Length: 163
Image 1 (cartoon, one colour):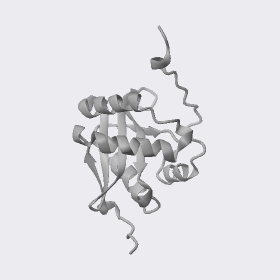
Image 2 (spheres, helix red, strand yellow):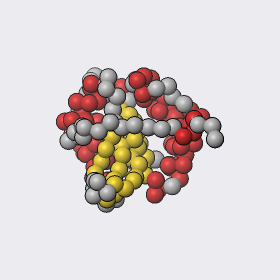
Image 3 (cartoon, one colour):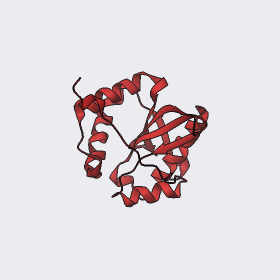
């Protein structure tokens, strides 16, 4: 029997807690496997960062994605501030929809729900990044109102530097 496509009413975001850390770790690993251009999963770096985010609401939010009664993935929203974007700003740091839920509208529903949550937090703009090779995700984000700003995101990893 095939699954019916979930409607926005069937998709929900459930605030993640420390009790969800193991499930989140599995999803974080799958995210890197599914999008290898993202780089390998560094558990020693990512797990403590996720634990910190779960424990400090001023940093952002982590939600488990539910499609009906099933767990369908997770999404991470981090909070910041941007003068250029008009104030409180948020970054969708990670969005993972499990393989069996892809192509069924779950991703679009999640993006709508995250936007509503962000608005309730006083967020003026949302950003995200996507690897150039991930055409499916790029189409999803464009369909949901995300546009390239003509800027190149550059990163300096301070934890890799020796003082």
